[in-house]
Length: 317
Image 1 (tube, rainbow, N blue to C red):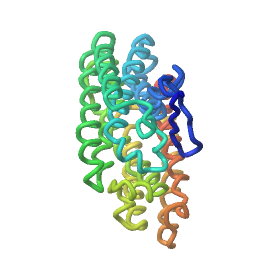
Image 2 (cartoon, rainbow, N blue to C red):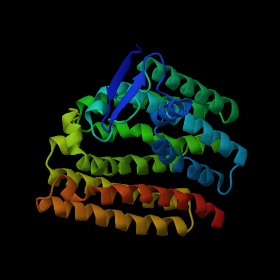
Image 3 (cartoon, rainbow, N blue to C red):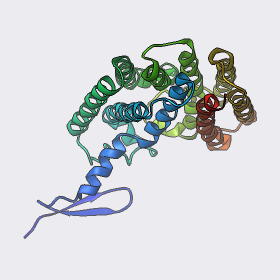
């Protein structure tokens, strides 16, 4: 008689016949794509391309833009894949992440590791051969920092994990700039600093929403180890620093009026949401009652808008 195995998932039992794979090639492809965290890759590219337009003071070489974005996407995908492999124990304990490929055993750790290595090597070669080796080195440094410093150390041990770990996510503007100029300057470091100050409000807002998840996984995100009002105050401080830094790009990069106008309006909305979050926290709200996703979603829009303005501004002025 044929052996039948029954595997239970959160939704329903899946019955698989012994000796017959329960996965189609589409399932396998979807699992590997999910390891790369496409939405995170997209967000990183949003800060790469505009830096190239700003560096070129107009439209950069479009072939160069293509290879920079392709290599950048592969580099980010590699880092995210390693993150999924190393964080599989954490992801298994969190409702938000437990349906990722690793917790569901759709991809084995060794397979994920090989996939991450292949993506990383390919990204480095594409950067070096079709962009320049400075950009390749920066992308490699960002990935090493994200995997070795943030994922393997900071995330599991420090409440300020995302403040310093977020440095890895600040590299794309630098990479975009160096792709065009093959050198560094003050302006891309201002873009770097904008993302640096943006990361804590963005991430802590999400951590408020999933505080119980992080607590269950024993990840010391700031909202897990600190009261809501104190975290909200820090979000406001970082938001102020972010807005001031974004406005500093205007004189440093010599933009026209479009960029500072967008940065100012977007910054006012960001600060308003931060103040409202603090007000709700001081009133005793917690977790979902804080409505932290309002700030989280706006933070994504804000970053996209000011970087888009940085790209369009040199086309107009």
